[in-house]
Image 1 (cartoon, one colour):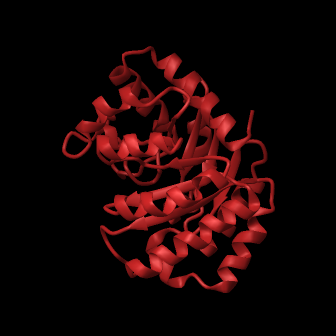
Image 2: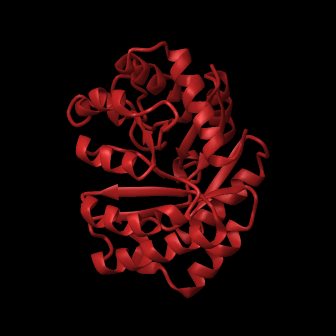
Image 3: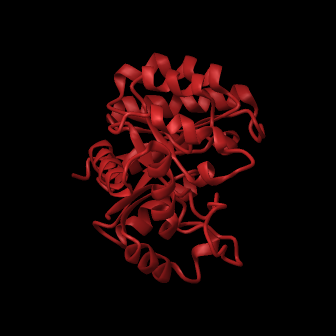
Amino acid sequence: MQLLDIGVNLGHESFQHDLDEVLQRAARHGVSRMILTGASREGSVHALALAEAHPGKLFATAGVHPHHAIDYDDATDTQLRELAHDPVVRAIGETGLDYNRNYSPREVQLQVFERQLQIAVDMQKPLFLHQRDAHEDFVSVLRRYRDRVPAAVVHCFTDTGEALRDYLALDCHIGITGWICDERRGTHLRALVREIPADRLMIETDAPYLLPRTVRPQPKHRRNEPMYLKHICEEIARDRGEPAEMTAANSTATAEAFFGLS
């Protein structure tokens, strides 16, 4: 079983002391390649540097998460464009809207989202998208750009069936994380993953966040790792009513095509 984790935050401080061991554990569990998420100007630079240090295994995105939209300026825009020229950078993002926390004002989030959508148009790179509690505005903006970018994935999907169907109608890919393993918040996803076509489904850990609650034994440190992607894959496969090997093969092939890694 070979897996590709489309969303992992290896630049997080919790991985500083044992990154090599984390990568080794992931490889032993079949996770041979990963896409490192760029979520800020500095984080995107760091993601690229980590990816370049592990050629053929790690790749990166470049973008600014809506939480950090307030820090986006012309220099940030210029730097993201420069990063996007690097062949290791496979998508623009993480970008989108987050009205759950509103760490950045909504009007600023909208402006910054559009600026990054334009980068994806200009660079012809796929989009790595984030949306939380902002579906109506998110879809409204995305719809204006969708036919001008090669592909788009709504990463860490946790929303409703209506939202899922809106994204699929826009020919978006869907990223599913260990949220599906959360009996408090994610049970609705167990039915919804059956609606995602095999060529639109990708899987991710979003490590170090979202440790699957069904992992046994639970690690004492509560840190999620790419090695748990295999567990997430098995849970999704069960809910889709198919062998885990099929889910793994299809999601990996889909991710390879999306990020141009095949």
